[in-house]
Length: 480
Image (cartoon, rainbow, N blue to C red; front, side):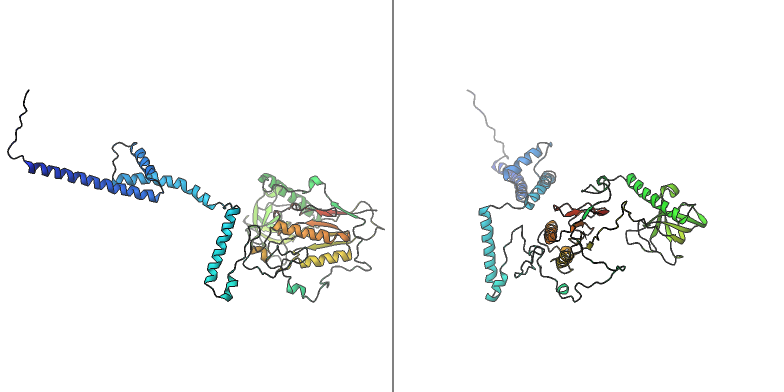
């Protein structure tokens, strides 16, 4: 058995070992401090990004394993936050926002808790007010189907079928309309008829139908803005050519010049009036759009300063006499106005037939300061008194320009207001026997505002009611 020999050299004693151990402990303590600081930063990220400790540790190990020599230090923790934590938060944030924006679902228990919370809140408000003000602090409980406006008067009461209290927060009738002094007065008349009595037969011997065939008329809703530009151009060009043929035959116009060709002498141009901007037509914004045959559809501004008088509207087909020296502006010296189309002439003679009365009324059928349809009620009284054979009612029935509609003060939908209005008209005039013709307007807020308009579709017509489009031509037939 061999014995080990230990050699103890002079100079290497306990002091040297203690110094080395202290240096090593200082290094280890520094490393531990750095690790602790980074661990504290990761703990802060747990709070910021709402992650559990196990989750963020797993994320760190998964991220560090994909990189060689990726140590736990301040720079790498910043990279980890930028590439992992922030991206994960951006992915989950829209879903959380969407969940928060969803309407809460209530049941019997949660609804009772909600009412109790409202009551506690009201009691808290009452505790900070005087007894006289306590009643004013009470809020009216509402439901999503019948929200309560801040301007609602608690003393309102419904009026007839036309003006239920649910229409508007202020169903009171218009004071100006009810106190007018010229009720029933004829304001203006056109033409003189002697021996005529404005009394109908209640539609006893009259029928109403469309002049054109159903396939050539708008009898139901259609998809607008689905037409091709080429088809629109062809329709407009056919219209210009048809009306221009009537103009040239009536005024004996032989030579037609292109609107885009220079003309030093006075020539005749043919086309359709249009506006060079989105505003209203005026003397400085008139342009002439030529047809395809003579002008290839070109447009040229028109100078109307030399005309003494004129009356134009967009879409009007006219013939102009003038010059176009630069091919960029037509200086008009004469205007050939449109020729009125002939009236419809029946094939059979109408002599000996009894007189037919047609009543035409145009909306809006409410006053500007109320939605109670007082003018419509007076119109129903006139229909029942005179018993016209045909009664044509033109919109708007629910006017988009009414102040209570513009300010969104109605408590029901526009369709419900219109249905209630039509129900009152049909039931109110049923005893007169008149044929009702209902035509929409571009200002009807509950209907498609694209011209030409399809007939109303949100109510079922009765036997005496006809729904026609805007634009339409109707034929009044007399039964023998």
